[in-house]
Image (cartoon, rainbow, N blue to C red; front, side, top):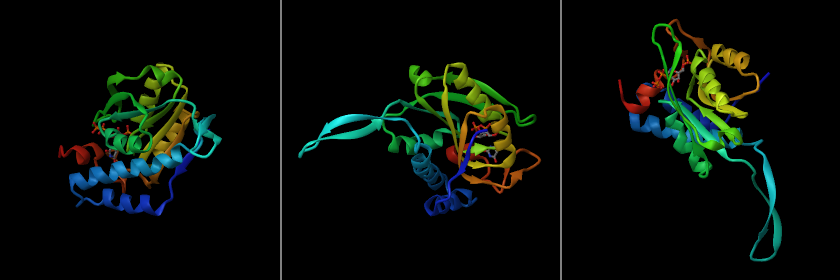
Length: 208
Ligand code: PRP
Ligand code: URA
């Protein structure tokens, strides 16, 4: 069974209050989503593999640790894009793959419409990123998509999840740890997270 890590940090809580507030404007919303993406990265990457190298300081030679594998960020389009810059601020060498998913508004079933990944997807540490883990359908299908291309070392990174989405993802992908800024109460009858933050893609891109 995978681990579920809910970040418990005053800075993240403070920024989550901004993104949950319906009166927050698009620019502030986007900035805070990205900043939470950056903060959350510190915890997600805690157990990444490292290797030792010899570095010559101005004083002497010493042994240092560096990441031993590529990191590949895979945002689920559209809303996942909102966290990429924040994560890349912390891991500037990370490569980015993309997977496009939209939820059918009636059935809530995810549909893949785009997929493009770097070759390192098979050997790197893959962060599948989507701010919202609602039914879990989109995240599960996106993880299917990266596994189909050979990804093995995979983590899911979100802002807001709910018990329904966590359960679905743990059942479908017991090998994928889940990192969230907040775990909310439930899904409502039309598939939105309660209390949540509304439609994340629309709020990021100003489409509503
Ligand atoms: C939203 C969100 C997730 C998905 C979560 O995307 O960004 O991808 O819903 O819901 P689920 O867990 O029930 O699958 P949406 O389909 O609205 O597309 P968008 O990001 O392009 O707006
Ligand atoms: N997608 C969103 O953007 N928000 C939700 O609450 C659920 C799915």
